[in-house]
Length: 437
Image 1 (tube, rainbow, N blue to C red):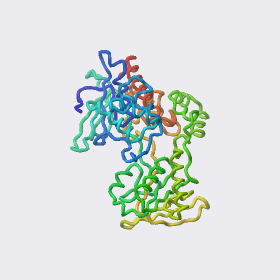
Image 2: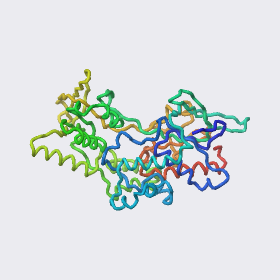
Image 3: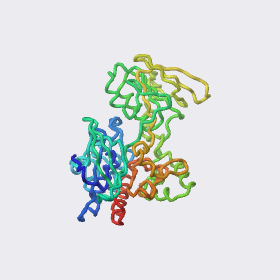
Image 4: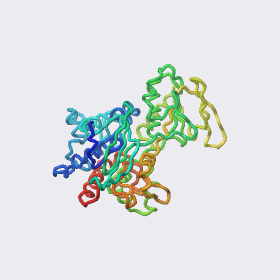
């Protein structure tokens, strides 16, 4: 993509995963684009190409949301970027319907995202890492207040500066490891699983372990059990087995678009109730069919007297000792709080989740204009724009990192289409109202 360095874009997107891809679609489809001055946008992504959780595209792993919760449908059912449009374009619509399943495989949904992304090659630059965002006042030059976005070419090493009236930050979640644990060639996080697994010969893996009690942990455990028929596979669980994800209709309403209003404008008691009663819809829970399949395998092995799938309940990893290719794991029992045991593994996978996006480091000096709540978190408007001091008229929009203000769907696909539409509407409304955007 060739960005025009003298142009001041209406918005520059930092990161180009599903969230900012959905925003690009919303901007393209906005009615303002039929006017004389469409919303101008440019996006920058540090990865060499588009990718979404590539290392968790396990065979048969399915999405946990309906195919209708795609990049556009909830905002615009007629969008040419819907999942149904993708199926039609791929000549698979009839077969998908015959499959009678609301939940496509993760691999197919990733193909859909790539298909949609192909329509925006002229607006996104890959191998491009945003290193700094700063504010500039140039009233004398007639440009008014705007932002300078410094972008580094991760291949060539050069830098360039792009101007914008607004930025949208969507840099994704950060893989989380337990305190004191470090990743290496035999200690992995689930975010790198398939790539790391491909670097090791299967015959070298005689004993493997997976840490965690969520969907990714269960899926990786199942995958290793499939792919390593001669290996001992251990699931290390801080809970007493896996907990089932609540995907019943009433519970799923917490992911509805109007639930964002209920959370945002609700009291502290309201917000607390959302998390207390409905956290089991998404966090540290596993789909029912995966739980039942793992239990069935374990039971059949027990009947056959050839147990190689093991579940270590109420157990945490206390320490990982490395010596060459040898990995020794020190386990701490949560049952009595005292018992410890050690086990040797050839690979250890931490499916321990992610930390929410924090834009503070990226914003740098610009963060001084951003207001925070009593707990030090960014204050965020309903339109996902950071609350700033009057000195800053430019907008900073967050696609992620807003769980404290917007609830459970902040970093999920469930509300992605509506959220992107609300950000697009905000940009156009502020420009139309005379804001310096």
